[in-house]
Image (cartoon, rainbow, N blue to C red; front, side):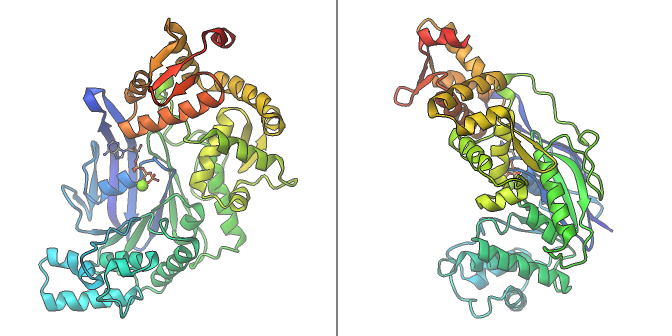
Length: 444
Ligand SMILES: Nc1ncnc2c1ncn2[C@@H]1O[C@H](COP(=O)(O)OP(=O)(O)OP(=O)(O)O)[C@@H](O)[C@H]1O
Ligand SMILES: [Mg+2]
């Protein structure tokens, strides 16, 4: 039985000053059925939280609709409750009062509220902390309150937006295990769970079905059934196979995601949109130091350890941190990624092992060949007699295509890369870019 259905949902956010719209979600179709745990997996910025907010009725879609229990959604969705990454507790209320808050809004009597809250607090293992204030609790305990507050509403579907990612490794592992135990024991106070995560192992561990989102704009690339008995055993060969496969998918936008078995043929379900302007092409938010750091690690790896999940483990990096660095290495043609493995190109090898001066030359060469926006910046500077441009000139070009915060991040990344490559100088005090007119000849 379908509890929530998302039909052809698109979401655009308006850019400031009537500069058009920024597409965040493109033609999303998704169904949450009774009795299943679904993980929504995607990189940072792929629109996971936006989609969750639309399904919770907190913001409307720009196009398409959401059905909850067969009825079109027209405001907050009373069939769902949400657990947030940031806990979102009210500091001036006790644990008990925080948990009761949502019930009060439903007009439930004080005595009943009290009993329901005590049961929920018990279920998350916070017995004895009813009258504690949030500041007295550890991060893990705060998130337990977050769960209790959602549980007490007995929603049909529980939404969790990266509920474990603000916690340290051991605490999150512990809490994740307990949530899974409750679900497997049939004691969970909702009919289904929708969890948003960028952690591949977490998705495979918790979910019956993993829906993979692509980015720019966010779109469903496909879904994968986790065909393992519950609880999902991390040491099972199939578990590792599924994790490896999802790594492959997430490092390669061309891979088609099919129901069960990895398939390397075909294109993405919804192809990414064609991007015309160099200012509209997003750069991965990665510093040059991270690129050279990763390449140096890879060059020194023992033979045969180029498997990306193992690399992430070795570097103690989350997927979300590793994948953009890999993207940057691939973009600059320092590395290739295929079948979940990463290999350095000859230029990448050279870059990782040469002197700092020569590595700057190599970086400049690769940046100009593969990152059109950097070449454009140089062109704009060369066209100026003064060889100088105010930084808002460049920033406004990104603002044509991205919301302000994202435009600033694109700007910062381009500045980092361009400065390292010595394509231009950037004076932070004056907020101006300069190009050395003599040197610029060498670039053009
Ligand atoms: N209110 C808004 N106005 C303009 N842009 C927005 C707004 N909310 C989100 N965005 C943009 O939409 C995109 C998707 O954001 P969203 O928070 O949904 O992604 P996410 O997948 O949840 O990312 P993360 O993993 O970092 O939480 C981002 O580029 C973000 O900047
Ligand atoms: Mg998010």
